Amino acid sequence: MKLFGTSGIRMKNLNPEIAYKIGFAVSQIAKNVVIGRDTRTTGGLIKNALITGLLNGGADITNIGIVPTPTLGFSARNYDIGIMITASHNPPEYNGIKLFNKDGTAFRPEQEKQIEEIVFNKDFKRADWNCVGSVWKDETAIKKYMDFILENVDINKNFNVVVDCANSAGCVASPYLFTDVGAHVISVNSHIDGRFIGRMPEPNEKNLYETIKMIKGLNENKNKDDKKSGRYIGIAHDGDADRMIAIDEKGRLTDFDKLLAVFSRYIVEKTNKKTIITTVDASMSIDEYLKDLDVKVIRTKVGDVAVSEALSKYNAIFGGEPSGTWIHKDVHLTPDGILSGLRILEMMEFYGKELCELIDDVPSYVNLREKIPCPDDKKMDVMNHVIENGEKIYHVIPETIDGARFSLDDGWVLIRPSGTEPYIRVRVEAKDYTVAKELLEKGIKLIKMVDE
Ligand code: MG
Image (cartoon, rainbow, N blue to C red; front, side):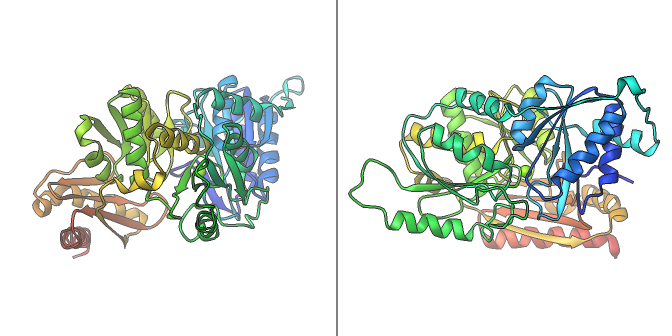
């Protein structure tokens, strides 16, 4: 049995008994722990269970309360380990536990395995009565994080921004930071409510419908003679604000891949650092859009752990996933949706352009996706088959960093087992629809051949 999935532990109705055991297991390897949580109604319950386990094993705990994941990751530098209680973009009935290293990176799979083994082998040692841990409260963590972020952004223009925090962890920092850099901020869903009463925390078109409508209305009604301040853009977070997505002046939810491409170009032009890290599922629009700058685009496995490892390995300063999870290594190694949002303003100021103009500059391609049902115990066989036989179908040898990725002249195909559901996923991108459709159908046939 596995407790940790692709992003820590995450489940519906997370059981406090599991949280207690995780806390107890963590106390076997760390004695000085910082803990924070998002706004979910079960957050206090899970936190107290974790703390009980930690105390039982003799760890001291600093509780920093409701904070975004990037605040927790930043704070972890002063402790042995950081623990964030969040289920990120999942609905309110879910909760989760994510562990962080001192350097702000999330636990690697082998570290998670170590915790799992302690839990499953009941390898716990209780602290003696005179070594039981203590709990401290630190209400300054948010302020320290905000000061740190402000030192690392440079914004001189006064922007108009709608900030949407999904009633969750972003509320305690994001609208304030945008105000601190001189923006006129309208905050939406920015009061704390663990039921996510304003919208569900996944920042997508459906959940952001009201916010998008509001930005369109604000910009339509804006006084045309008001040349001083620009039109509104939106920055929307997920439940723990390690991600963000922008809404442009036309009221369009920006395409995640295009936003990543535009921002990557900005980083290269501003810093002259010519390596960008992204994941195997990112669009080729990033390569195309950066082509003339002679940039090396390196693709890793999906997930922020792989991105942060690659940032160090290739000495790059920026890495982003098309989900809106971006790491700015020149600042810190935890994905940070608030810093990412602020840097979008920095980018607009750098180019002296509206966000919609920048986005429209990126080429568009056809993207198709399909998921084929596949039980967990058959996923490995199917993937082996895809890797062995894919070359006959696509006439190239697949890259196998994460699943099988076939890079072709006019597009690419990624076949990957889902980490959380019983499916094999096929993603295809090409310059025109007919080619994309053909590549997708070949991929589906390749997967289904295993049953025949
Ligand atoms: Mg998140």
